[in-house]
Image 1: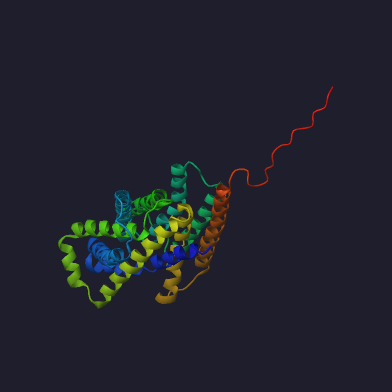
Image 2: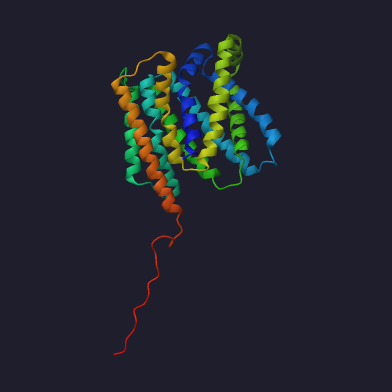
Length: 310
């Protein structure tokens, strides 16, 4: 479906961000990086909102945007700190658990679970992620692993809430995204404190280009597309598509980083893409069935039998 392509684009952009973010955290620290990323994002979104906003945002719209801003900022904080204290292998496996956690949470909230075949497809996709990142081998659990696991849970909550709170409502996607970026900018700027000035001084031309890419590509573009798509599909489907992120990270590493594909890596890619495709079909079929009006298919009123006298 065409609405799936923007989510795949987000997965590709996020997959390209690992090396960039890692280098920047070394140069200026985690909080400073997140503060600059959000400040640039907010600076880009506010003029757009001022130009195109057709009406004044409602209190509920601002409240929902603020809540989503808090959950999104929490995901990035736990994820960034987690990656700094664990292996990329463990981080890739743990964050991919969102593929399973999101449909479970969505089922609890909506009191309507997807069939087992969807979860089987999601398990296959997670298994593919394990193969993708298992080159150096899984490392013993650490504090960083716990942070990544928390990030996966919060990401599932964020994706589910994005759909549950905004779908079918007269909310503006640009407004919600702008509020999210402003919330993150305020939080991380306050948390970064003096380290923000140190990072600004330490960054050279290449670092500023990298921060700008993270802000405009991995934040503004990704947040807009993610929210736009989730409001038009299910959180489970969106999470499954975003779960292809490790595939693109590997392919980008091969194309730009000079890495080599192995048979295990190819098998992992095949499992992720195959599981994602199967899960998409299951979710689409379920959604079509749910949208059918009662009595619209293969239902005919019963004709009473002709009564005969005795």
